[in-house]
Image (cartoon, rainbow, N blue to C red; front, side, top):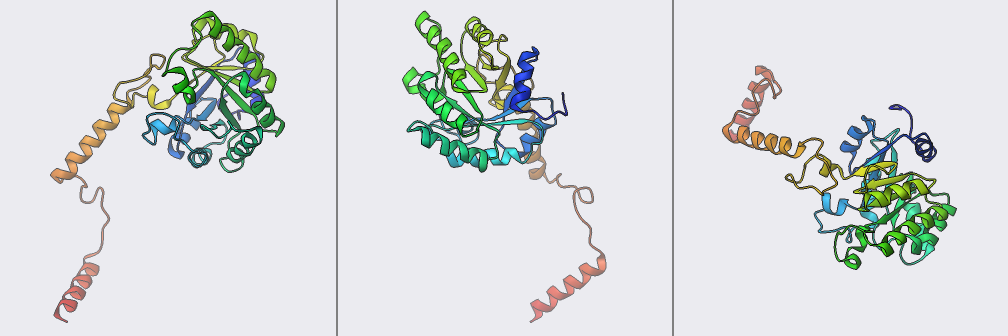
Length: 288
């Protein structure tokens, strides 16, 4: 399926055929071209860019302008990969009308194919309104980072009976509201597996186990770009961070010792005649 364009319909068929869906975050054009060249099915321009790209402590300061800027950049590097953009904190909380307007901006200005918003049953009307505007919606339940203050931090959700049932019901409600995918974050594996079986639409897990219909990771986590630090659920598929640091260090060393750039190998030539003329011109100016 490497050269086939991913659409919401295709992702749904993948679930029905028992095929797993792969998704990664991405925030810039260069990385998007690399993901596009792989067999990854979908990209999420997550509001996690607040931490990974902008240096915030959490996702809360991220604005609509931030999301549109990064989503548009990513879209320019894609042809076949399905593109989802996060709706940032307070971009859909006030009303259905606000939600539709901002979702429309991510589609029109950011060129996303779908938007993602956090929250379960209490945001069903937002999902329904955006869907009615012909904009596909990805729901996000379980640990929702925009609610970290309400949760008291980044904690696994659904470990007790009441919360587990609530998350299950949230999943059903967002599907009923029209969500095309449901992201399950930091939910116990058995609960996520049950939800994935109960829902008709695909589930995308992050810290929710292999029973989900697909997986998403922050690409900096899976590439080891944070000094070896990663959430429990993130596997290091490569230590790109170490490779980058070594390259930066070697570059700086060679610049300081004068071994880079190498004359002829990294430079451009000029004829002696032209240089003689330039030198003569310089001497003439100095004499003036």
